[in-house]
Length: 70
Image (cartoon, rainbow, N blue to C red; front, side, top):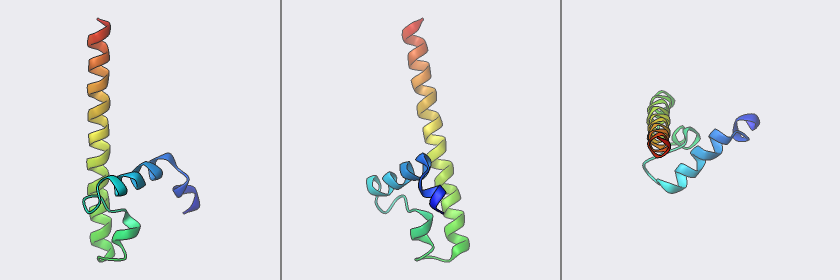
């Protein structure tokens, strides 16, 4: 667990907890409130949304940069 909490990904997701209270819940918070299987399912769904959104933003930034260069 210590290694995971030191990762940049973990810390970035932790910031989401503060930016989007109630919408994004960390797995550790969810398992104290809802059954573990549901918490794990929701955590996977949240991760797909977060990483998909990040990939989309990176793609848009790359397209903007290419457009500015060309």
